[in-house]
Length: 222
Image (cartoon, rainbow, N blue to C red; front, side, top):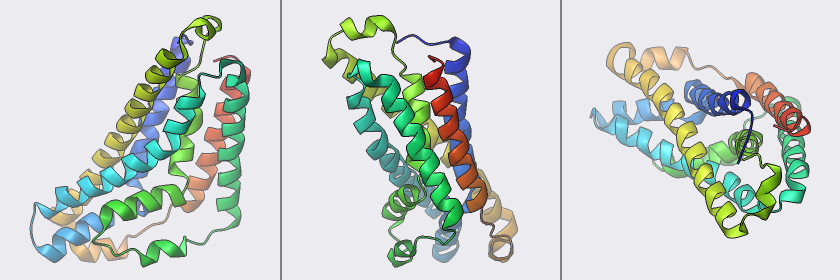
């Protein structure tokens, strides 16, 4: 799998930065980790909650990325798949710009089930979709790839999908964990209740941007 080194580095940085952004966004769950630790009055409840949130988020990323990793052996449709994925992400971002309401079904998930909550929240907000154009760019195929065994190609792409999801989720957990730990140890619940902020508008715009970036790299052969 060959690609321009600068483009490849930019795509990997985008994977990591989008993870950091998810971690900073309270909508991805770090306030629930703080609340769990404060309610249980145990410091070890915080990393446990963050771990459950990370597992749910990682699974949500893989549910989206793995089907694309298995489709990539259709090399003659690679550009079409990447353009289609970009359009899908732009469509999700546009939908979130128009429909500003938080998904109601998330409210029916008990906060104790943090892994399930994180999985549903990531999918409801299109978090996995944001990674699709980046992942497809990282797995960009050269002309000789079509002559390789399909099985080897798919296994390589599946492994890349795991690394992309893992890098993204690790960055998210790090960013969210730093905020959660700071609030739990020093700032407290009162600060948390007064500083809840919502990044839904920025999130929707960022989806549109990533989709457009994915289409651009596909059309320009990266």
